[in-house]
Length: 430
Length: 113
Image 1 (cartoon, rainbow over the protein chains, first blue to last red):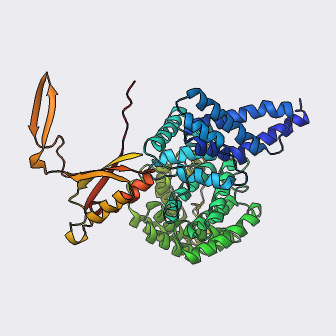
Image 2: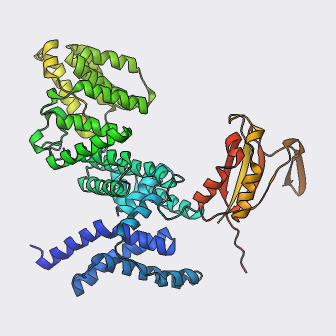
Image 3: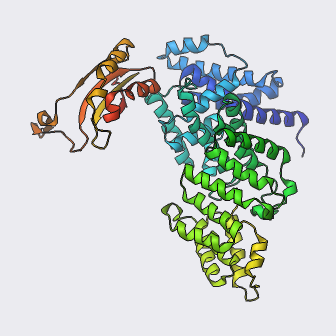
């Protein structure tokens, strides 16, 4: 049975409104009443009411304004019933909802959700709920935690905003620049968990696209901030590979094996231009990662990647913020530049950092480098150790394939030179 | 919105330098801006008593309730628009450098009429 055309149009209009207007509806009620729970309920109600009203009366000329007005009126009704907050009701009733400042509303909401007085988990959960309009169930699926946990995080964040007096606003100049980093960090986290879930959760490209929209808004609003530009560049360059990174079974395709003709050229071009300017003006954490992603995007094939530059960029990243994961990636790049034994030496220097204790990455990379060095028995042991620790099903399948190749007697002992010629990274920089 | 800021001594902080102790300026700013309602230093630990009511009797002990290396040296009661204003103000207290300042939002008691 096919949907009637007007029902389809209604559903599309509602989805678009939810994507484009949720934050504005939510933020407007916060701004008028200062009550985050009320804002959450009224935004929800407005969208529910829209379904019936738009079906009955047709689509409003300006769906956003309709939703904002409806949510505001609901809020006034609720406050009136509470009576005790009579002055609030008057204030809310008097305030006219201005049109055309939707981005301002979105920014106020983002900066407040990312206030440093809130714990990081609360910042992320509240941003997903208030700015991006995800339900608690969707957030729970994204982080593979229970809905009750997500509800708790959101509730505590809302309470903390009320009890510690966290203001609903974009911070004033001076403080704003300082706070921007925290907002960028949450946008980055949302993108990463949506686009490349660390825990095997379902990939949400739609949400990753929304994170890019927010990053773009932050660049427009902070044109002089090189890190905002670096973040947008990084996200665009990763995003450009979305059509090539899974095969038909939804298994991850390694960077070296991806069909580069599927990469999104427009996103790469924009990302590269942004990465260049961000690196020139700042060379911060995001700018350097974007420059790394740009190196991969530039290379016609994996073997043609400029590994010497990649190693240099990792060195700069390490100087900025020492991290075992970055050192691990650098070891892979070293192997690409100078051969697997050089990579293994770099891994030995890395040792056994406790940050990577429960991650499969260290063992997986060691196994791969040993394999390429022709040290099959050791490679097998390391790969098996990695398999014990891996969490993502797609990566588990990849390791299983590797283990069966390594255990087969007929497995060809590739020579070192062949391995070098193969020159390809097993660890994508995502 | 009311906050109480609690001034701590902290042995791990920058060593105290009397020349950098501009507490008078800090207090004056707070009074001029009407955000610092009152505040004082507190007498040392040796002059502290802790009182408790146990089994119908009052139990008084010498010294502070909690044995910690960081000692409370003073307090201020603030009336700020929001936490950002309070943080900005206390961050310029001399003891933010030579100690630490704890900022606690006041949780008003509601009485039934």
